Length: 178
Ligand code: IMP
Ligand code: MG
Image (tube, rainbow, N blue to C red; front, side, top):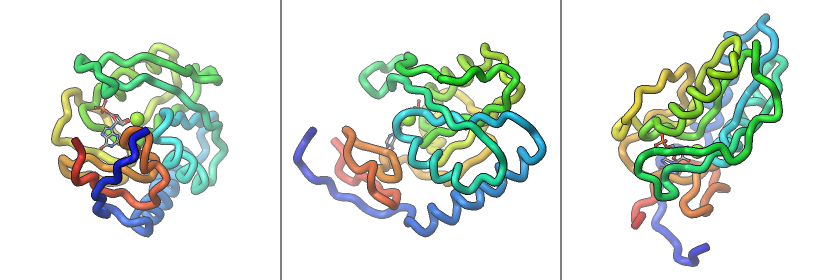
């Protein structure tokens, strides 16, 4: 863990985040009302903060599960991702909502969606907190979106830089990222 501090600038405030997450929760609750077996899948580790907050706003029954993946940003430029922790629940014939913190190139979600599809879910939708379309390589069908952001690196609300800043309550731009 590095000791240096970075220059951070607020991009999305805590109030804006809380309002948006509440409204996404209402939307999801409305859309899945009456349907059974909703499984929320949070992608470890960044999206856990968002997924848990979102789940608090759901007024329908759900099961929360987690999937862990090794990120391409760990140095793999080909976008090869690998499952490091698999789901505990069987999602066959379940309504699945995949919850992710941010979509950048789309490679991570593309891999996950292809993988989850082979498990025969009843439905499979995507809920992302942040969308950065500038660097998209693969098109991702996004059903629920928090905020669209410009081509800047962000931290906070679960998003990290070398495991730092996940605890920040607002979304900040990391101005001096090397
Ligand atoms: P993608 O596969 O390029 O769409 O990358 C998505 C993953 O990269 C996210 O799940 C994050 O873990 C990570 N990531 C991408 N952009 C950022 C950022 O600005 N801050 C922190 N993590 C990021
Ligand atoms: Mg992630």
